[in-house]
Image (tube, rainbow, N blue to C red; front, side, top):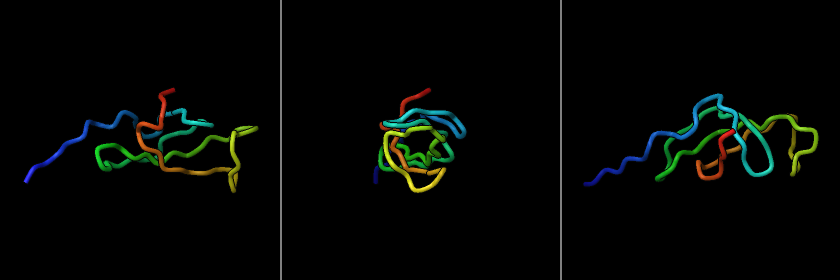
Length: 69
């Protein structure tokens, strides 16, 4: 049996981040398959690049999809 370890998460809770089309804040994260998956709460913007249902939205992003702020 072999075990694989992934690096520590690159981003932390409540850290402000950028991703394609918007800004957000990390709400939580968990280890996935060779990466970290983050729950990101999108910030309110005047004109986001895409439609959303309500005033606030949370999305799941892999670490590779996030840029630091």
